[in-house]
Length: 150
Length: 169
Image (cartoon, rainbow over the protein chains, first blue to last red):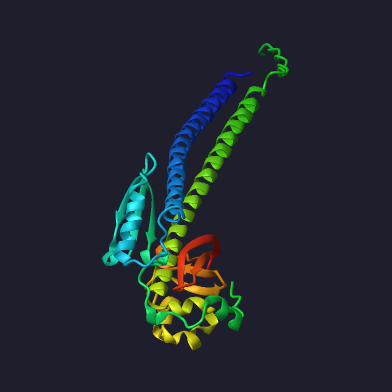
């Protein structure tokens, strides 16, 4: 074992150890950040699911009754306001398009979700009697046999 | 004449000579390879996370489009609810003109998405909806929604996402 060989081997080991430590350190930091982001994504997803369940909850006032779309929208807003968001999630409600839509903005850290709901899509408002069909859906389907497009 | 200097016999290589350097090289390679594989695992996890977040955004865009489309049909074109899409152009004009139908089917693109299929049953309908590409930065996604049909008066209620259908061509 010569001195030159020993110095070269030590240098190699030191260099590779330093590089590895640097990579491990970076990976550990990244993993911690990812874990936080993953928790934020999961809490947002849970909040979205809770929101959907709340809006579709059959135990709540039935949404299928005749209301104006403004009233329907207010009902949706009240339902959501009665259910505070999960901890770590900031929820804001906006009503774009002149109050015909409800935009729910959820934010957790850097992650965000945006859900748009239309009061008219809940079936309780905005119907135009002129647009109603002369036949019931089942009868129309029997006549047409469905298009089977899906 | 000079004196003849006797030459020293060559020193035989010691058994330890040349052993340390290859050992150090091997250990260094192992360390670096281990680090690289660890970083690959971390990157893979990050990609999964990005995919999960993107899927959430896709669902948001598709749910928004379904709400706007079903809301518009409920409000102004309820006669279309009982008709399969293939019969809209003939039988649906009593409540939706062809330009209004074209808006729902995406040629005008004013609802954040377009309806690709509508298959009504007795109490439920299935809708295939494509979100606008601009919403996703160029990636269009499809989703199937289940819609409950309320009979009297005929209305669609609360489109519910059944599942994503991948990227549109």
